[in-house]
Length: 121
Length: 121
DNA sequence: TTCATATCTGCAAAACTGCGCAGATATGTG
DNA sequence: CACATATCTGCGCAGTTTTGCAGATATGAA
Image 1 (cartoon, protein in one colour):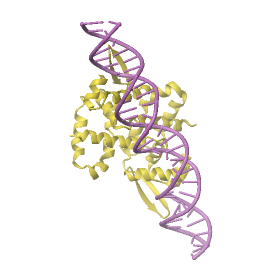
Image 2 (tube, helix red, strand yellow; image 1 turned 180 degrees about the horizontal axis):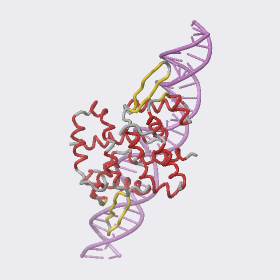
Image 3 (tube, protein in one colour; image 1 turned 90 degrees about the horizontal axis):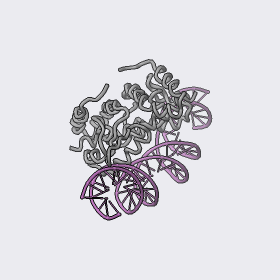
Image 4 (cartoon, helix red, strand yellow; image 1 turned 135 degrees about the vertical axis):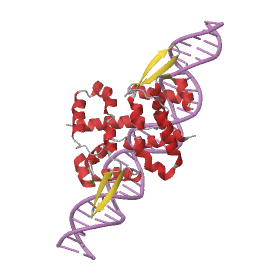
């Protein structure tokens, strides 16, 4: 009976996990395949510690998986399609952007959606 | 240059807005068309005050729009496709569910995805 | 006007998050 | 073993979110 309630709670948790700029960028960064903490950190220009924390979080809920090789840890998306799914939300932020940031957005969207080399589907 | 940063921040905010069980259910409830606060409240079995607060939030960022008729206020999704998009995230919570809630989930998903009468595309 | 209905707003406490930093671990090198 | 590299974990402060409740509006009816 409370099935829908449970699902909505689970879904909300998923959204909460993705509701952070760093983590969204992180997921998009992993779209093109596994990467190690250091690479991600420098790609996103963020301290490795922070990336590590985000990754620990995403790993705990099994959104990413880890592979260790020597002293470097590689991470990859458990659901590669998730990266694409996230980008599908761009239309929903349109209005707010056009109201304030105007120019930036179209430019931005172009980059975001063209950069990745299309993984699965 | 900081375009991607801006987009990720905007996206994160969208996710944060949806990262709440009540609001997710609310959005799904509105999938089939506009409804007034009272109806939504009783459909979701939540106090109308709370629904009102959530709606105010979603309206402020233009995810829903309001139409007043007499003393009742009707709300509708600005992006009806959003409801469908949200359901596309269900596969991403699979593992976690199977680990703990097991049975509930498949049942739940069935209901969630069959109930709505397909609006747009 | 007075009353009932429908919804909204403001407030304060409790709970939750994100952040940097210091220190811990683990692996590889000489 | 000693040392450098790569990453992780624990801690505490600061800022944000959620929630119920009391009271404010707004509309319609008598």
